[in-house]
Amino acid sequence: MKQQEISKFLSFVLRHNPNAIKLSLDKNGWANVDELIFLINKQKGNILTIDILENIVSSDNKNRYSFNQDKTLIRANQGHSINVDVELKKELPPNCLYHGTAKKFQKSIEEKGLIPKKRLYVHLSSDLETAQRVGKRHGAPIIYRIDTKKMIQDGYEFYLSANKVWLIKAIPARYIKLV
Ligand code: HQG
Image (cartoon, rainbow, N blue to C red):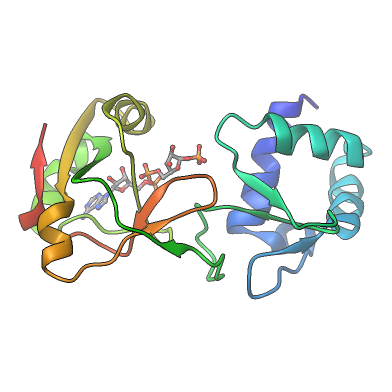
């Protein structure tokens, strides 16, 4: 199995379905590293070693995963659909952020605002390029600019994940505008 495929499976397990390999996560989203390797190998055939896992974590293009200090635990930094508390930091965002999505969602988004759907948070990008890339995953992309300045004035709070993704629970339609 290629490293990228292992990484995809890892993110599925750590963000969405630990039970798929009978893994349990603690309330902060941490999995025991030895247990994770054992359970993945049991299900997929011997594909993972600690060296491969360390390499996946350190070379990940979005820094999706973190080890704890002594590398006995691992978790995904953001993107979860299961209810874990990854100890996100409340931070003041730049004056505008972007959300890349697909044209097919436009009508619904402009009615209901941005909602997290299956995930715990709406994911926002600080640059247009990233938003474009995120949007393309779902089809013909469109990009919304978020008036974070106004949202902060109105008392909304934003979070920054360990891998620097901006997150918020939801965004009412009045704060978003097509770029
Ligand atoms: C859309 C990837 C209809 C929303 C990316 C999005 C990101 C609505 C889709 C991260 C809606 C959910 C997250 C509404 C929002 N009506 N559709 N009211 N509100 N939506 O995948 O933001 O590679 O859960 O616009 O790079 O696309 O996995 O969220 O299009 O950082 O690490 O519902 O996942 O990172 O899709 O992506 P997703 P996302 P990774």
